[in-house]
Amino acid sequence: MSTDVPEGTRERPLLELTDVSVTYSGGAVQALQGIDLVVRRGQIVVLLGVNGAGKTTTLSAISGLLPYSGGSLDSGAVLLDGQDLRGSTPAARVQRGISMVMEGRRVFPDLTVEENLIAGGFSRAAGETRETREQMYGMFPILAERRRQLAGLLSGGEQQMLAIARALMQRPTLLMLDEPSLGLAPLIVERIRELVVEINAGGTSVLLIEQNAAMALSIADYAYVLDGKTIAQHGTGAELLADTSVQELYLGIAGEGRRSFRAAHEARARGGAR
Ligand SMILES: Nc1ncnc2c1ncn2[C@@H]1O[C@H](COP(=O)(O)OP(=O)(O)OP(=O)(O)O)[C@@H](O)[C@H]1O
Image 1 (cartoon, rainbow, N blue to C red):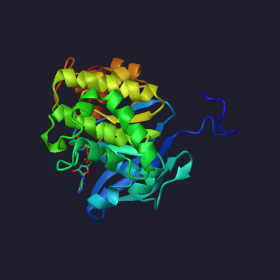
Image 2 (image 1 turned 180 degrees about the vertical axis):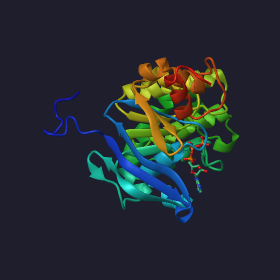
Image 3 (image 1 turned 45 degrees about the vertical axis):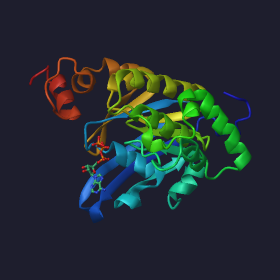
């Protein structure tokens, strides 16, 4: 780590969620209940969980998008570099260093590749974004080849590359990715894994939601398992890869069906009873 880190901030997490609870529909749906989560500088942190466990909600609480989907942060705090983000708009959070690649890619289909990248760098000076754009074309040669093409005409994998490059145009300190490999061919999934590692090696911390748990845990410094509103398990990527409940539920090893993580864990603790 560089020596120009101000005194007293060395150990402060980049991102910290403390006791975060979220509801939707005016309180009718409890999506998260008292979750704690930390991303340290330079880490890749993975969030696992079955459908509906609250993974996207967690990212929305961080990005500030919750109110736009009818959600509300009822209690707890989201801190970036020790600063409470409450009251800060999604755009302000992007400017403070948090970029997100939403599930389903969501590029602007009627804009060209280049225009999508320009839009991604919305808060930065034109000269700076030109330089970053060229870096993106170096990192994603296929986007350089297609720079004048409409984004809607790209393949699924190319659109995902564009969505990631667009998020990087802000030069984020934290990049959040919501299921970037969903529906993509194995070769593209492998490319996405390499890209996440490359982006992280360049100094960007990463918070990754990924259905492909084996891939995600293989690159995770730390990981959390959400199990219907709460964090059921956390540990290093290696620890979770070795955890029998994770293996059973997320890695398809000795599968015992679609139970909750907690139920699988408790069954294991009772001696493997089904
Ligand atoms: N806009 C919304 N309005 C009402 N309920 C919602 C809304 N968005 C999510 N929920 C509910 O909140 C809970 C958590 O949903 P969330 O999308 O965060 O889960 P997830 O782990 O990301 O699931 P998936 O893997 O299916 O994307 C679920 O019960 C879901 O039905």
